[in-house]
Image (cartoon, rainbow, N blue to C red; front, side):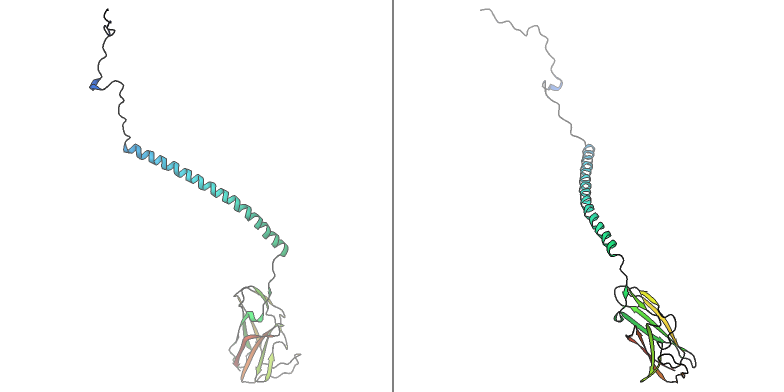
Length: 217
């Protein structure tokens, strides 16, 4: 039997890799630097925040659309109610809703006496009060003697309507010339003498609570 021929004979040999590394071995991967890792984390955080912002905007937009649909019918109902009913006119003030301060002026000898009547609205809503001479009446008396009334010889203005908001006040002044009076305003009345007198106020025929004061001539 003839010997087997050596097939590697005559072929050039490959040089061995430097450092003794084996052929086909992969070089180890380099780990990213700390700066690169920080930049990547910042980019990831920015992307996450952008996604959250988009989600919040979307939810807000949907809620706004739903609320807008509810507000529109409510606005239409309110407009319809205002058109139907119109503005509410203030009502007349009730005597129990008025706080009254009645203050006679200093009474120098021979001079007329002035009375300042201050009306205050104690209710929670605006109301109308007539402070004219026909409605707001002062009566001066001395014991059982009715001396003078502003209704006997009424002066102008006969009507004076005032709008008082809640808590507002209005002051009107009435003057007495010290002459006695009687119903129908007959002439020839004598002057009132010196002494202590009482004055009371009424509004629309009803006595006002606490609207009284005493003074001396």
